[in-house]
Image 1 (tube, rainbow, N blue to C red):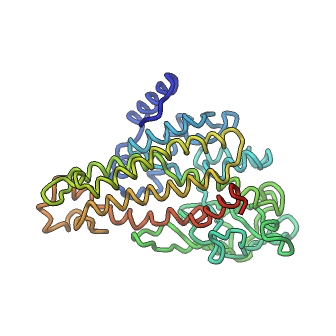
Image 2: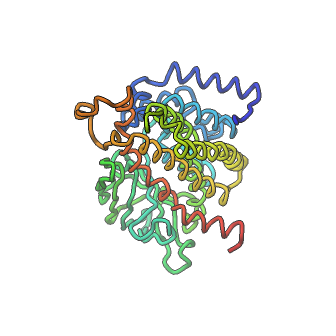
Image 3: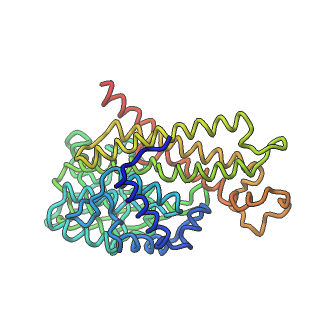
Length: 399
């Protein structure tokens, strides 16, 4: 059952659809629909298009350069964008760091960094996880020792998505070892061109090199790059993670992927009939569609809570769990529907012997396995789903 919108919200939806039809570059939407990787130039181009319209930083209030949207407008935009083949905005700057600076940064930081984000002058990445501090984020060991007007940073970050493109990284660093783990962490902005910063790519299962290790060796960071107060970084980190976990759910992309699944299931055949008529496969499709409809409502509730000034913990954790499970199930069903045609990393010219494939199925299959493997990570990053269950148990059940 579709959500019911007011006439004003329906008018906004029509405005978004017109904008996407007129302004979304075709070469970018074609890549997105085909499940292909976008280049940095593709993403920069899309960000510039959105910024020109004033829709790039749609989490931001108007006084900071955002559109001042409410929860429903964000939901409509994200959904319509995904359906049209619009790429996900790279979240680390505008969707994650931006809200932290708006809430906790000083005026100098907001006046300097926020306009640079909007103009695309900085490409940000996230320095949270470490080899010994992933889901147990409070165990970070990267240190920042103050010496006069600088912090000297030493340590290592891992799983730094798109760090190969970034010129800036926001980091959780340990500034006090003598207190409880969460109480000795600070939130620091680091220029990746500073001497002592080294980025090493990690090749993932789908063949990509989009995640990285970042090493810090006696890196000098100006004290003015400290966000908020020293040793209060855990508070800012938790606030940022509510935005990350809400975004990971990817409602719009689930809707788009479900539409692709239905197309594939209609083209693929089993025992001489379309796969969508197979009782077992059809039942799994129906279940994931019901789960997705329920998640739409939950998504609106969480975004509304954040927009109202709240910091939802258990709610965003629930959404993160269900959203990642739904996306993984849809991608799994797409891959299963392809059967022998879901061969990873093979370009179109090498599909010899598959001439009997249903019309259009080879095009759909080209990235099915690669996307399936790549998005196994959804239930791990942003705090693994197991950790999210612990958060829910603690916040709701008091365990």
